[in-house]
Length: 93
Image (cartoon, rainbow, N blue to C red; front, side):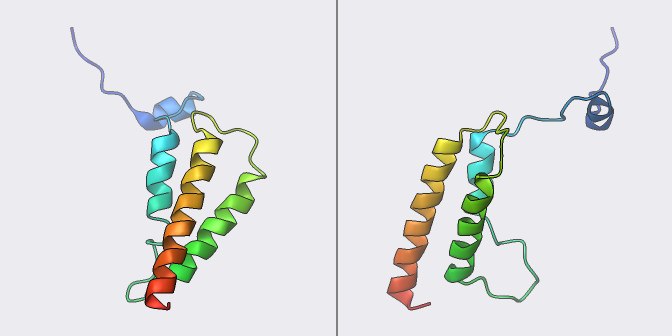
């Protein structure tokens, strides 16, 4: 029997998804928010806090969370902001 290789693009074209994005995936994304930036541009703690606050505002507009748990994500964002604010006070950035 020949095994057929799974093709994400054709799966998408048929109305499916190539993968399922879950809460853990979103948390990993949020942990790195702001790191995709121009080379040689410093990422300030205040930039991360700003981006996380913008994400939180955008959450209010989202109606379909799929396999993600918005309460867990919100809690994680609050923890990240608290962590970055503490870092900011320590370093004065």
